[in-house]
Length: 277
DNA sequence: AAGGTAACCTGACTGC
DNA sequence: TGCAGTCAGGTTACCT
Image (cartoon, rainbow, N blue to C red; front, side, top):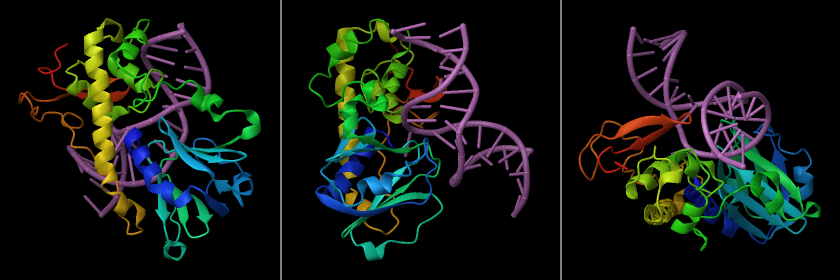
C-alpha cells in the first residue's frame, strides 16, 4: 500500500510510541528484504534511544544519536505497533523484524520483500547523503514545491508527465495511485510530454498533488486507532479514487468510461474527455 | 543525462 | 478443485 500518505500515516501512528523511547532489544527473524537487514542491527540499536521518527519521501528515518535506521516499505511492507507487549501475537511467516521497547513492540512485515531496513552510521555524515536518499526530489509539502518548481525541473525531460511524477527525482512521494489521481484533478493527460506543459497547468498540478496527498493522509489518519491495535485490522483506508482502478467505469465528472493504459510497465488510469490535454 | 527494460518477490484473483 | 496466467501501492541495476 505504501505511497507517501501510507508512510506518513505509519509515521504518525508509531511516533508517540517510539520517539524518546529506549530500544531494549531487536530480533531479526528473516533478514531477506531487498537488501539483507544488517546482521549487527540489533546490537547497534539495543540500549539506544529513538530521538525522532522522520519521513523523507517514502522512507522512514529512525534517528538515534549515533546513526539512523532507514526503512522502506516497498510494495507490501507495514509496521505495526502493539502498545502492550504482552498482547503481541506470535510472528507469522512474513514478519521480518521485531523491535522491543520497554512497554511497546513494533514489528515489520513484508511478504513481497521489496522493502528495506538499513543502518546509516552518524560517522558517515548526514543521512541525507545516503545513496538511497541523495537523489530524491523535493517534498510535496515543502514551500519550494509549486508550479514553477515543476516547470523548471521538466525543461530537459522528454518523458511523459506521469512518469516524471513517478520517478521521484523532481517531487517525492507520488506513487502509482496518486499520480493518476493528481493528473485527473489537474485535468492533464498522463501521456503528455512533461516538457510541453506550461506554468499555469503545472500550478494546477502542484495544487492537485498536495490536495490528493493531504486527503489520503486524512482518511488514513482517521483509522489510526485500528492500525495501532492488535486486532488484525490493516488500518489503511484508501482514498476514494476518481480514476485509479476504475477502467470502464464512468468518469465521476462527465460519465465517459475511464481508460487504462500502460506507461513504463505501470498502469495509468484517466478520463479521455476531462484530460484531453 | 535521460530513458527503456528486466529484475527482485508473494499472494490474490480470473478463466479454463 | 486445480492449474496457468495476470496483476499488484516500488525501486534499482543495467543497458542504450
